[in-house]
Length: 95
Image (cartoon, rainbow, N blue to C red; front, side, top):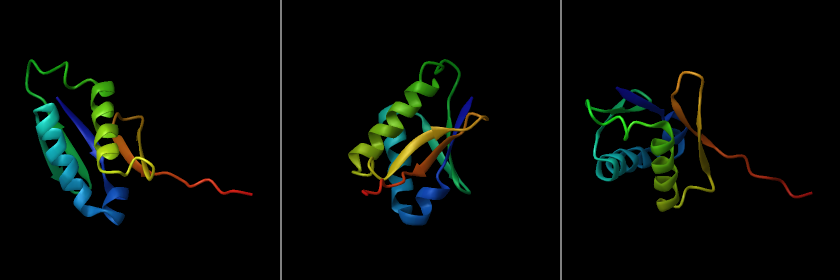
């Protein structure tokens, strides 16, 4: 089983953050993460079903953004195919 994370928006502004996310996933979740094109692919072995839950992955992605002090700039959403997207948040304008 695998989960995909679209990091194309993150690459535009912070390419080093992709390496940080990859290391964070490997260290904290304990599974392999590989970068292919504009995606991080997390592969799970048999018996790691608990680690592959979407809620668990999203929690750790949010935590990684927070630790890198980027939580205010980016957020984690998922599309209909189950891929996580890291998108830039829009700043609110004061009137």
